[in-house]
Length: 132
Image (cartoon, rainbow, N blue to C red; front, side, top):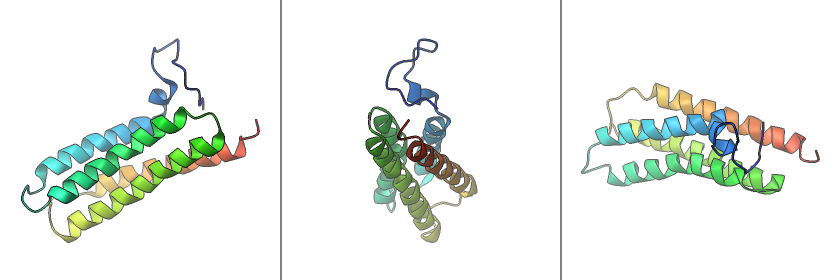
């Protein structure tokens, strides 16, 4: 796993753009936007906005963390991204409890679980390799 901040000469992209966890986070943001369009406009404005912000926070913090040089800074941003994963879970729980959507959210929860595991793995990897 490269954690460089430079662009890849092969792809012309920033390295973090190639990370599977970043790609999954972008996929989740797309899913959230689709879900939010189906929520009732009158009673769910705050929940829609909060879910969008929390979902966006995941790839944004992954990207910002990749730009940091020290492992502590990198892992801090990745932990914030992981916290946003948990925030999204709580918001989805509210959506279900308040019956704001009739959609099956199982896929959303599974995607968040995957992203959370990937972030935990990346954080653990950085912690183990911090002196290298």
